Amino acid sequence: MPGRSASGSFSSLGALKSIADVLGEVDVRPLREAAEQPFLISFISRDAPLAQHVASLLYRGPRPHDIPSVRAVEVSTLEEALARPAFGRLAILITREDRDNAAEVQFVRQLERANTPALVCFVQSPGALPLLRQQWLPAASVSLHTLGDAGHTLDDDRATRQLTAAIRAAKIVDALALARHLPALREQTARSLIEETAIANAVYSASTGLAELVPIATLPLNVADMVVLTKNQAIMAYKIALAMGLTADFKHIMPQLAAVVGSGFVFRQLARTLVGLVPGWGMLPKTAIAFAGTFAIGEAIYRWCATGERLSEDELRQAYQSALVRARNMAQTLLKKRPQRKRRSA
Image 1 (cartoon, one colour):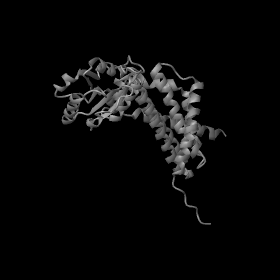
Image 2 (cartoon, rainbow, N blue to C red):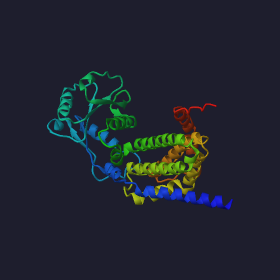
Image 3 (cartoon, one colour):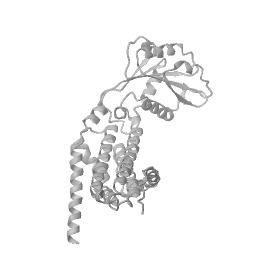
Image 4 (cartoon, rainbow, N blue to C red):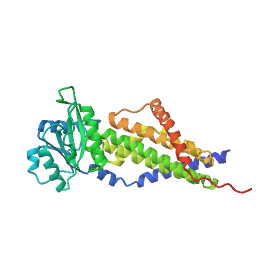
């Protein structure tokens, strides 16, 4: 019917205008300020070349050329460190498991008195026994494994994974700032952002799906879903760009990020959201779509930020379908937890 078609077009345009208005009102200044906040991590060891090498591992990763001019790490010898009164946000002490670490123990206690968070990295040769590790508490510790029987060459790939995981777990520095300044933390941070946003959108869709059991509320709630889910995806995309070292200018970067995904995919995602217009029946697919769509968009944004390459339509579709398998299981779990409606007595 002509009238119904015109009404549908009007509603769609109204929803898209609402999305544009909401995105225009997003205040990204706190995100930008957090990502650009300078910090300093101190690497200390008796073996200065070893400390320098371990510190350099943090600069390996996607887009290593896009690093702020402010240096985020410093390296000093243990002797120099013992004579210093203060350090950066985090002090990372590098030593070997099987050496006499009396001076290192003294230094960790000095850090504790100065309320400076510490992380102890043990370069662990094959077969070495943990001799004094219990004396390092309350400092956190991580083992950096070596290659071969001699134990002189660090396993760089494994050491990078162990070191970055420990730094992220310490939560001393904002995750966006860590990634923006140190390329080795970029992929982990971006993937965490994608996962967290996809789950948040799925949970949101499941919660609004409950309200949509009331037919009269269906249309406005679906329009609200479009706005909220798209806003979350846009903020996710901007955070990924910040983490990957790209420009922090929101108005400059967002059109580029939108072009990476492609309007066709975005509009199909918005259309799929309308499955919730059928009260009750649309809850399960809508929740799964919210997760899978967000995940696929995140993957496309990360690929472009990391390599400058766009996912093809086929690759984007594959990313969506792969996420959808997992999303369906998640949606079923979320919806099983919903309150059960009481049946009316006949």
